[in-house]
Amino acid sequence: MADESKKQGVTQFEGEDLDQESELERRIIGLGVHREYAKWAYYETNPADIFKKPEALDDMLVIDASYGSFAGLFASSILAEMGAEVIRVEPPGGDIARKMSPYGMMIKDTGLPYLVEGGRNKYHVTCNLDSEEGQKIFKRLVAKADVLIETFKPGYLAARGIGYEDLRKENPGLIYCALHSYGHFGEDAEKFGNQPDYDIIDQARSVIMSITGEPDLDPEVPPQYKRPLKHGNWMGWYTGGAWAAYGIGLAMFYKRKTGKGQFLDCSPPEGLVAIANYALQYFHMAGDEMPRAGNYDYAVFPYTYVRCKDGYTFMSGFTDPNWTALCEIMNRPDLHKQFPTIKDRLTPENQPKIQHEIEKFTEKFTSDEILQMLNEYNQRPDKKGTVVTGRLETPKDVLQREHWKERMTFVEVDDPYYGKLLVQ
Image (cartoon, rainbow, N blue to C red; front, side, top):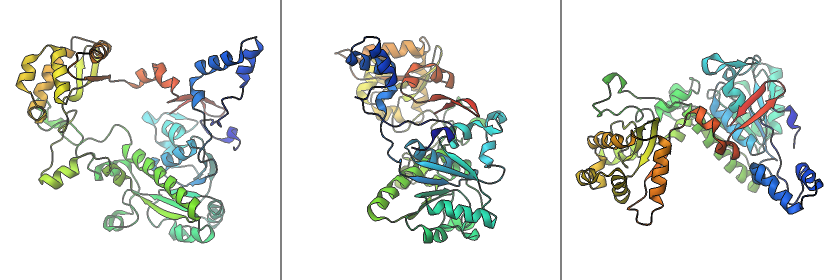
């Protein structure tokens, strides 16, 4: 492993044999406690250590030359967490992505998203790719690398003599991953490839935005709110980055078998299209576009968030047996009689009516009370079906719950330069 003190953000650890005593275990044993009990006590109080494993990609070297795009940054962060050695190449003055932060919040002139998502667990170097010296340095770096990730406009690096065809001459095993909203070939790439890779473009081009937003047919929604909506996070970038990391992993597997590298053309909107649910298939089969559903769902219902005493909670009972169970819990046989089958419940006109009736019940209870109530019902031997619920949790709720900490979903680190950070 490399010297982790040089890396920014998360400190990774190597797996250890469960039979090997840790320093804490030795101290416990030194107090006269039986060794097996000491091991049990240690792992009871340090549950995340059970999941320590050797890092799968600890022999992979990645050069991340992403600029202004969290798609590439997220891809290399995934690889770094799996053990890869990642070197970030930034221009003089730093990547513009460092300036992207909520309300302009900065730590040492760097934004939160870059610190905890884009720059973690990586080495950082400055290299001016517009200069001859910078291009020579870049070539020397890539010559030793397994992977290069870049998010420049198509042809940008090739025009400087450091594109894929140039780099593969020195490194035929290079896996070159290029991420761009329009990809590197095709009609749209030729027309619009001069634009940078932006998350909002990725979302808009993928149909995800067109199917996200308040439902057109809900009479309670004011007309001004019936418009397409982007996701609350940078879903285009993160989805594109995840697909890129997946593709790089497969290319690395191929390289280990054959010794050959390859060019990966990754378009983040295509990653979103792959998870766009049934909207495209519906139009292909029916020749009609579905109206926006909001928190409803035209394939399964009830499968939505409903009001409760302390906010909102998720409620699901879309199959006929589960709908029967939900109506029994609410003591609403009339509702079951009015909408007996799943087809009765799926129409855009009926879903708001059903949700309104469910909320007459849920608004009397808190989300925790509903969770407890349904858990008890689901364990009954005479239950008619299973009704699923789940709290709608805010960032504050998530950070205060021990469950997430125990599972190491996020970790607090004390960086010598940036101070205390929460990485996820």
